[in-house]
Structures are given as C-alpha cells and as structure tokens.
Image 1 (cartoon, rainbow, N blue to C red):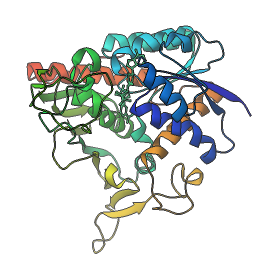
Image 2 (image 1 turned 90 degrees about the horizontal axis):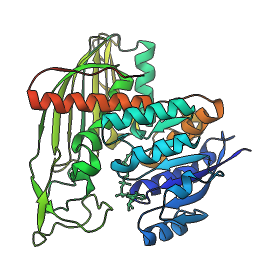
Image 3 (image 1 turned 30 degrees about the vertical axis):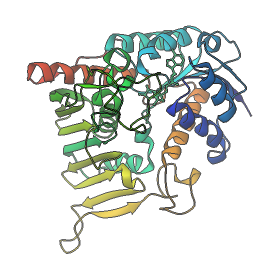
Image 4 (image 1 turned 90 degrees about the vertical axis):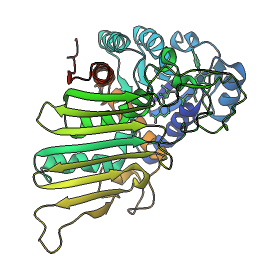
Length: 391
Ligand SMILES: NC(=O)c1ccc[n+]([C@@H]2O[C@H](COP(=O)([O-])OP(=O)(O)OC[C@H]3O[C@@H](n4cnc5c(N)ncnc54)[C@H](O)[C@@H]3O)[C@@H](O)[C@H]2O)c1
C-alpha cells in the first residue's frame, strides 16, 4: 500500500489531534487511500519539538520549518502553527509541490489567503483547510437530508459557536487575542467553523450585517507562544497589554439562494463549552444540531401526521455518512478524534484521486472574504456585500 510522508509544523494542540488522526485513519478506513508516515515534526521551541516527536511518534524533529518544505521525501505538509505563519509556509510548500493540510482560518488576511489559493492552483497540489466540524456524521446527515429535499427549500437558519474559556478577564493574552498573530478574534477562531458549516449546508453568502465587540480590552501578558485555552488560571498581578481583536461577533446573513440567517460567536459565554449549533428551517421541515450532543441530529418533517409532528432524534450510526467505517451501532459515541480521522481520510482520498476535497484553499479564501465583510459591516453598520473570489 502506498505510503505518504508527513511533515507537521507547529507542535501544540492541533499537532496532537492530527497525529492521532494519522495513526487512526487506516484503522477505520481500510483499505486506506495511503498509509501516513509521521516523518518530521517542527516547532520553534526546541524542547516542544523534541518532546512532541517522542510523544506523537514522529521519526525526527527540527526547529526550522524549511527542513520539511525542502525535504524531497515529504509528500504532505501539515500546518498547525498560529495563523500568522500559515501563508509563508503554505506558499513555500505549494511551490515545492507538496500537498497541504492547513489549520483554519486559512490565513491572517484575505490577501494572504488569495496568494495561498493561487500558489496551490498554479502548482496543482491538493489542499484542505481543517474545518473538521463539518465532518461530524450528524452534520453530513443534515447535508444528505437537505440534498434529498427532505426539508424542502431552506428559508432561514441560525448558527452559534459559544465557549467560555476566555470569560475570565485575567486569563492570559495568548496569540488568540493579538491581531498580528491571529487576524481576528472570536470571528476567525471559532465563528469561521460555523460559517464553513452553514456555507456547506445552506449555500454561498451574499451579504452580511454585523456587530462585533471587545468586552475585555486588556489581558495579562503570557510568556511563550503556546495557548493554554483557559487552562492556566487568571493572574491579576501580571502586567496587562491590549486585546486588539473581537471577543464577540454577531451577524445576519443573506444567502445568494434567498435563505436568511444569523451567526453568533463568543469565547466569553459562561457555561458554554463547545456549543456549536445550527437550526435550519425549510418549507418541509427543520433540522437542529448541537456539537455537545454530536451523535444526534434533531429532525422535524412537515409531512409527519399532526398527532406526531415535532422534533425527534436520529442517532448517527452505520446507516449514515461514514457510518460503515466507524462503529457498528448508533450512539456508541462520535468524538473530536473521529472528525479529524474522517478529515484525514477525505484529504488522502482526494490526493489519491488527484482532485480537490472540500473545504480546500479556495473555500478558505471564500471564508476570509466573508470575515472581511463582517469586520467591514461592524465598522460601517451597513449591510456589506461579500466580495467575489479572484481566480
Ligand atoms: N480545527 C480546530 O478545531 C482547531 C482547534 C484549535 C486550533 N486550530 C487552529 O490550529 C492552529 C494552531 O492552533 P493550536 O491551538 O494548535 O495552537 P498552539 O498554540 O497550541 O500551538 C501552536 C504551536 O506552533 C508553534 N509555532 C509558532 N510559530 C511557529 C513557527 N514559525 N514554526 C514552527 N512552530 C511554530 C508554537 O510554538 C506552538 O507550539 C491555528 O491556526 C488555530 O486556529 C484549529
């Protein structure tokens, strides 16, 4: 069976998720499109790089990402760094002919996203942006129902991504609060996952009307680049520096196909952990999904008799998307790991077939254009049209 050599850059939270997925993918999807071989891991922090190579089972490590991009034996470059270095690495990797899996959001700016997309296109490499939540089987089932017309024409929708890990004003000023490293705050970090899901389920966005806010304008400085995602306790004795991105964003969406909706994202909603939800209303029924109960899709079909109409729960299992590869009965439990394993499978399958999977760099660029429109609209308080992709 064909082997594909992986070079992974940025050995933090996502490196762990991707490494588990590389190991697990062939165990679920057999015969696998290729066997991933964990060749080299890179982190600018040498101790992190060395430790991660041992823990995540990479053959070698380095502190310089050029070692991966320049290595002729590497087939796939996996970018798990903070957002400010995605573009530089991805463009070099595309020019070196490597296939690229890049964490979301695609880039720091729309211009970078465009350059990444064009470099990948020019070099004919396969790309994927790691919006893994759309790969939850219940989300794929929602897509199947929509495609089959089970809820008719979509009228409206609402999407949320609510967390509380940064609600403590003394939680550290990690890279996720610094515009020059992350680009945007709640919008890019978590809002883009919901944008990806709703763009996938409902259709292209035409225009947005947005409001953003920064509730906690300064936070204690943290040492080092790695992000504790609220796991280190707030310390008010540490000097503070400004936050220059949004803590919260909320926007209305007009889709090109006429559907209308709202999207909300915040990391300051006490009591919410990973509350990714959507509710979609169509002329023939409705769908509701909550990632915190990710085995379940709530469905209501208008054609059900008056005496039994209402939301009911479908537990995803073998009869549903990716079901045959996963677990033998419904409701055994789909996890974050499974979404990353499915993502890895779809990426390698696309490489094997010489095509682009979704979401690819073009989709990542489209989502950056939507983020731009949200930021612009929040400034002008006007409906703002999402700019077209420049091919
Ligand atoms: N898909 C998801 O569910 C999801 C979840 C969290 C984060 N992310 C995305 O993944 C990316 C990484 O986030 P994370 O949570 O793993 O961050 P992290 O802070 O846990 O880890 C990032 C690592 O990158 C290293 N790094 C920074 N600059 C580097 C460089 N130039 N070269 C090599 N290494 C470098 C840091 O030292 C750190 O170890 C971000 O783009 C983020 O938005 C995606």
